Structures are given as structure tokens and as C-alpha cells.
Image (cartoon, helix red, strand yellow):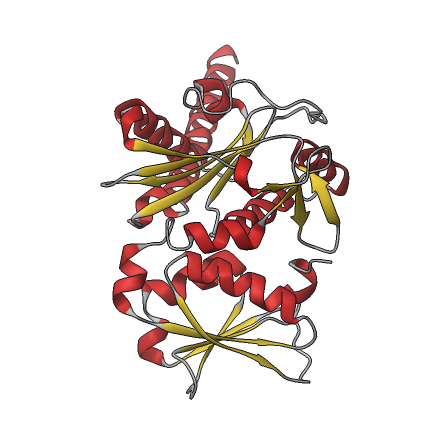
Length: 299
């Protein structure tokens, strides 16, 4: 009897170990497949939100950029939320249970497509501006213990990047000139965009010269904002078109050849649109906003 129990116990232990191994293998494969770093992009845009909020545009070969956002400056929060101070954006995302608010807010502010974003597990409102805005790189705790859309592989590779890149390779952008007003300063989107347009773009997208037409139903302002983000990625937007057609979700349209490019893949991955193979006339790719108008809507 004892021998039978031992065999059953041993078999159950083997099954459990096999199950754990398969789970870890699945997690590793999924982490590798979804890794931003392993997609081979020239630049990776990362936000660390918190008491000391920083935006990094990390370049594998050339100069990387660092922007430190004061907690007291107001920015537009996409989704119809209006203007919020940087220090309160995380609290809003927590209350709405939409962490993507952080990604969207800093994508619009920097006119870029933010790849990875990190934010504290415990959300607070940060009233005072940090005194360490332009000092130091993210800590190990920030990378590995913060909430994030980053995979484990991305966290590991991101840590390696910060450890091996000299601080002299970072160009710090001062945001003070782009704060309009004093007590309730508002971020100057147009001024920042005009001065730094193209600073965070992907060279591979610019060299391919594939262009986009954006089709919207109501909000030209939202369409323009999204076009600036796409342009900031190095993808040229050639037309903004209004039409009455109601679209559920959003849609990306291109011919078969263009649909296989990294440019098309990048837009599909970031905006999570449905894909359609078809002919286009004005541009190489058509982005029909549909629900994106509401999701990225600004007042």
C-alpha cells in the first residue's frame, strides 16, 4: 500500500513539475514574441511615470533623448478627459482602470508612439515638481517592480540598455520654454512639435517613404493630433479626409505588398486596428479612425 502511494505521489510530482515547466516555457515564448526590443526598431520610446516622470527615446546607435515632465504642468489627456496636471494623470488612469491613459497622454505630448510605459503599483497625486528631473537613469526597482506593458524580456533588455549606455549619449530636452503660464502652466504642444518634430522618428520608416491618409468622421483636431504622432514616428501623412461613413473600431487598408511592410505592422500593432487588403489611391495606407476618434479625442 505504501509503495502504491509513493508511486502515485511521485507521478503527481512529475506531472506538477512538467506543468510548471510548460507554463514557464509558454510565458518565455510569449514574452519573446511580444518583446518590443526584439522587433529590431531603431528607437524605442519609454515612459516612466511617477514622482519623477521621464520620457526616453532610446536609440541603439545614436543619441538618445530624455525629457523630464514637471508634475505641475497641464497636458491634454486623450479620451475626452480634458486637461490634467502631469502629477494627477496616474491617479486618473487608476480611477478609470485604464493604464493606457498614461501611454496615450505622453504619445500626444511628445508627438511620438510610446512603446513601453511604467507606473507605480500604488498611485498618488504628485503636487510638487521633482528635484531630480534630469538626474540619473531608472532604478532596477522601477524597471522590474513597477506595473508596465513591458514583457520580462523587455525589462531585462531595458536594464541592460541603461547600464551600458553612457550618460553623455543622452540629450536632455528642457521643457520649461514649453510651459505657458505660471501657476497653472499648460504644455505648448505646437511649440514643442515645431522644434522637435522628427527627433524621435524611426529611420527605417523614413527611408521606406510609405505614406498614410487618415480618414475621420467628426474631429479634425483629433485626426491632426494622430497625424503628428505618426509623422513623429517617421511615417509621412499626406492627407486628412472627412467622410460620413460610420466605422466600428478602426481599419487599416493597403495592398498586399504594403501590408507586409514594417510600417503597416507598426501602425496595426500600436492602434490595434482591423486589417484589410485593398487598393488605395491617395496614399499607400489608409487609416480609418472609427472608434479611435473617441479613444484619442481631445477637448
